[in-house]
Image (cartoon, rainbow, N blue to C red):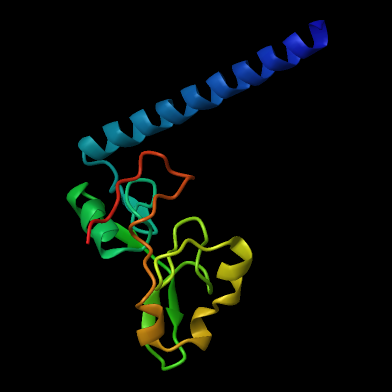
Length: 143
């Protein structure tokens, strides 16, 4: 029992120390930025996927509204050589909805390989209506 409590206490102390270091670093960066000593590049990974559905136009607009200076995104090519924004070469079952309005299993999503499909087929899927369970505070894109 003592060893379990010790492990929990050490883990909690490490989490607190990391949080403190992070906020101290953030504070230093903010202070230096406000004083004009450094330029700070605020980036939105996949368009700020923690706040809005990733790689959507709504996410990019929201990130810009937050003052982001860099929109980070990954690109894929479709079979007919159209450029699309997608982190993965397949759909993500966490938030993709089929053209029929159904959710996808991980196995089914992995079979839909974006570079093997023409753009007009990919455009029938939805990646903005379903909440991503990894980000419970994420807003939903409205049609």
